[in-house]
Amino acid sequence: MIKTDKNGLKREASCGEELLAMRDSLEILGGKWKLQILRYLTNRAHQTNQFKKIQREIEGISAKVLSKELKDLEDNLLVTRTVQDTRPITVAYAITAYGRTVLPVTNTLVEWGLNHRKKIIENR
Amino acid sequence: MIKTDKNGLKREASCGEELLAMRDSLEILGGKWKLQILRYLTNRAHQTNQFKKIQREIEGISAKVLSKELKDLEDNLLVTRTVQDTRPITVAYAITAYGRTVLPVTNTLVEWGLNHRKKIIENR
DNA sequence: CATATTGGTTACTTTTTGGTTAGTAGTTAC
DNA sequence: GTAACTACTAACCAAAAAGTAACCAATATG
Image 1 (cartoon, chains in turn green, brown, red, blue):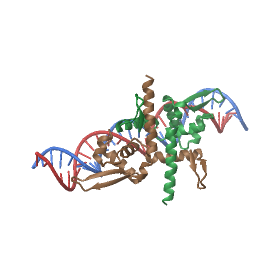
Image 2 (cartoon, rainbow over the protein chains, first blue to last red):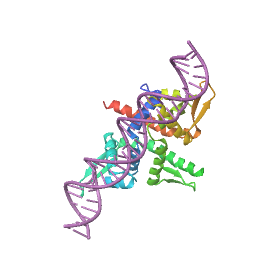
Image 3 (cartoon, each protein chain N blue to C red):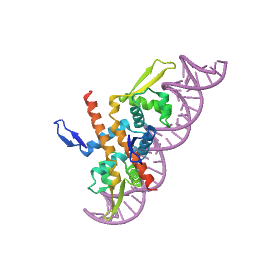
Image 4 (cartoon, each protein chain N blue to C red):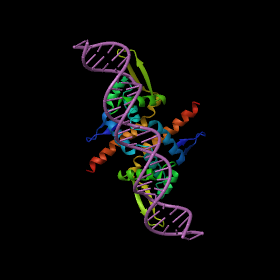
């Protein structure tokens, strides 16, 4: 809601601007899997994240969908893909510095989800 | 990532828990329109938000979709629907206190979108 | 030789999502 | 009486997203 001007002044982004910005975000980060994948890779930034391992640990994602989602994320410079010279060949995916800027988004979503579940359980 | 225990202790939610929490959030808030609608209603919490007005100001949404989305949000106690005794009858939608808890989510998405657009423009 | 693993791709089907058009009911304005 | 506004809903359709299953090449294991 607060934006820094080209003049260095803080001002509110207009409502229209805000909704457009959110559309941009949702276009890149929206859908069932992208934020989950980014969160997963952020939590495991220090590890080697191979395709199959990711597929096993993000429950329910198919190879086809994971492959496509990773490609999209790579196109938007949020993750990197590195083929490793092992036998059999493995491919490591890692979050980029830019990908890490999505962390505040997933943080709020995790917080909200945890709180929502708590609320649901309380009201039973 | 940080969660308060039933014991009052802070601890990390496990990665699995985190992803599940995010799935819960995305199930309720995901899709093309829900967060936009919530943001819109939050920004106009002090106004009377009639159906047609919302439809005109959230560009591109059809009556059918808006109607369905508002119903979903109402079911999840995020917005209220009030029929007003005007002629012609109008219906006012408003964000609830619980709906306002989604604000951190839309804030981060707006911020990220604004920043992303800036980045795209810079790299041209 | 048979089987398993890695990192996918391809073809096909289903499900979900969203958009279009038309129509309804009540009321008001011309 | 006719048009217009509000708040929808129903029928229909198209496109996108996602799921399923099979398959591939390379290598390793038993």
